[in-house]
Image (tube, rainbow, N blue to C red; front, side):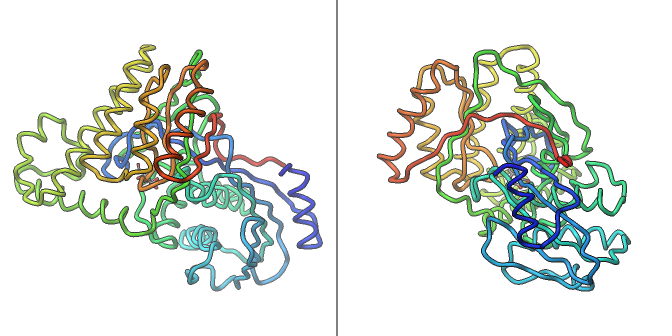
Length: 386
Ligand code: GLA
């Protein structure tokens, strides 16, 4: 959909033109998985696809929500904007309104809002974070509240916790808010300090493979991993006071891992500690121009997510294993929360066609689902378009 088509759709629905059109991107994470809520590092980039939001003040006492991706319209009175609805797509937006109100911002007038997004849903490319962040960015602009991008990301994360009931880390919302064209964000999820690292790779493409097996982030498995890491921290605290698993080097962890009596929690912790090290090493390699080393670390990340963190499954494993067989693949791994969704691969330009053909047919033959492939364009974070 073009911006003009979106504006016409708004006017058709609400009978008035929109005052503003905003955008926030989805993301793909290159390395550093399930490290964010453990105080570790991540290395995501914003994508060129994302969520668009059109808005106008309506002079009334309700906020009206429509989405071109959803059948139902939702209308919420101003005094109900801190209450979660049962089973509604609008919770992602209401959750963000709630964060503004909780900070003491007065919303005295209603809004008309229209949403449209082109992030494939359920693909693990953060369609929900892009929806939250575009809402936060638009409200910040409309209400002139002056929060910075990091604050908007934090408010969006809270919306996800309280209204989508996923205890996610900060990575997705941060990438949607702070992304920069042709850069990845090397983010310390404890301090929220970050560096933008150029990822314009000569002769190499970032290829995203969609398993079309929905990632079931809200199924409880994600929150279960968060809880297992917390358990590991609690047990480690008997021998060494730490707040986050990411505080430990691999060597330090080996010395005290026996304090974790729960075998599952121990495996989870081992993934986190090793993944943080891999992420730091990968960024160092990229900065030094050693893309082959970066790719090896991506592969090792997948193995650790498969064996220790156990968030891959047959679809993601097949997609990655088939990718590893292709000449010209520098590295390949699952990306995002896991249990389905997408993989990310670095592929030499001349190998991309073969990749799409061979990995596509092998995956379909084994899994029985037709996958989809996208060449990632790394774009900017949230913005006002008009
Ligand atoms: C999801 C969460 C993120 C992060 C990833 C795994 O995308 O929203 O906060 O934990 O999973 O790295």
